[in-house]
Length: 257
Image 1 (spheres, rainbow, N blue to C red):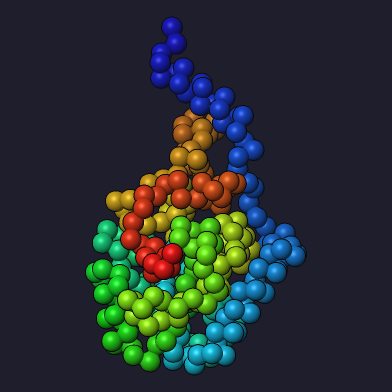
Image 2 (cartoon, rainbow, N blue to C red; image 1 turned 90 degrees about the vertical axis):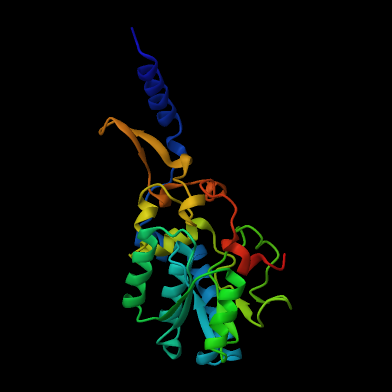
């Protein structure tokens, strides 16, 4: 007699075969670099960075970096775009319940890109005020937000903070990029990224509100067990945040919407 567990496993195997089309194949470098769409997105990001650099001096600019995939792309684009920004001034607002893997990746990027990184704890708004009190010359901050992120649909490439927030200009070079654009860049440039993205996480927040993405759970016939596909194999970008619960981590980009 077939047990309930065996029956469930067979249904999963059948489901996986049917849903193979839900996952995209790995992106190779030649495909990305030769893609006019990809090249246009990169050129647009570089144009926004150049515009910001014409409005603000290097000492007036900083990057908000949290170890996620989007700001990792932005970090790489920034350092390749302008030598004037080196060493790149960056700020990290530490979450209340961080992943150890994320913290280690932030340390790795700090060394790899020789960032002048400062970390701050506590409520986001107060942490920003503290950062500006220590670096009063800073007038603008680069953020790796995309228009598909919650609260970002109405943002402009350069958007000032509200009056009840510290006086900063927020700069969004990747605003028009998609989830797949981000992974195209990371993989085509062979950049390191947080190891959690290879374990079924598609969006990273605090440990308390971040789970593996159920959309990436598949049955591996060779291993004979369920596994999570890496984040870059998620084809439906609308499911990017299916593993996240709402939190205050997005306050800086969406507080005025």
